[in-house]
Length: 117
Image 1: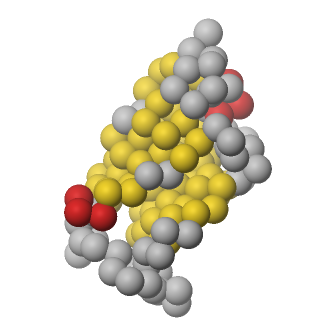
Image 2: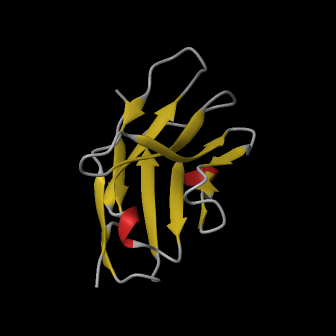
């Protein structure tokens, strides 16, 4: 059984920062990928960022330069550090993990990020 537990969401003012965390119940091994999607009301689900077991990172254009995706291998944990937040960043953020390129995605429960004055 694979479990992903997310934390760190909340309410922040525009220009502020949040650090999301996602702890996975097992290592992603040598072939896996961990990352984050967001789903805002009325919008489609979008990939935010990902990091592979080989430390290859990918960021969406909307967050590139404002966010990073640090990983703690020893704790099977991935973070999403979000800075210079904007109201349009408001969404539910879902952590995911894939252990192989052909395997299924496993999802966290989602954590709400609200950017508002």
